[in-house]
Image 1 (cartoon, one colour):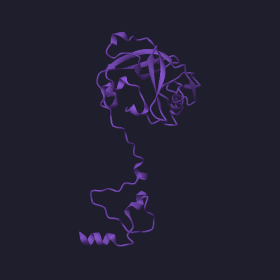
Image 2 (spheres, one colour; image 1 turned 180 degrees about the horizontal axis):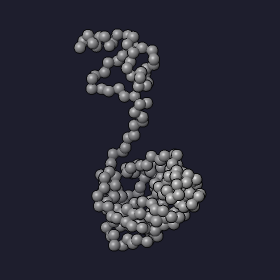
Image 3 (tube, rainbow, N blue to C red; image 1 turned 90 degrees about the vertical axis):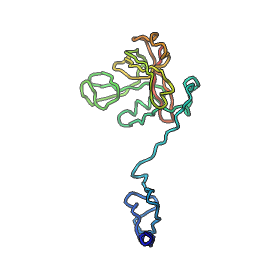
Image 4 (cartoon, one colour; image 1 turned 30 degrees about the vertical axis):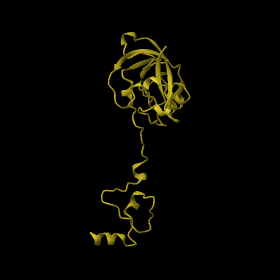
Length: 206
């Protein structure tokens, strides 16, 4: 073992991490720093940036306090600029921006580059009214992660005024009183800012 370590420590041995984009290496051979066998050298250029999440809140009363960016501990979308970019840019500005086919003139959601009705690729984006009504709903008594702090909460499908349908966590209702929630009730979109790049649309009973 000692002989093997001595061999590796000799100058002129190229670092094996050169092939994986080691930030401290170049194509020129240099001394190798021997690390314990349990340590792996992983290049960020290979693995990509690491996303870290905040610890989940265990405070059951958190849903009653004022929401701030630091409070948001639920999944955050990673927008695709090529397919859904205009939707999320509109959301940041507090607008519901939807895709519409210019051939059949039908709005569709979720956003796609091809019309799901006539298969045309002629798609435009426009600002919608942000109005709709409850198509159906369900009360969620169990959830994972940050949503566990919100139970019971209500999920719903919203029929948009412009056509098609959107899924949401419904605001302005009490999950303990589902008898008070009626299909066909008017709703209006609102946006919750979760970080500097993403605002998420939710629908509220009006």
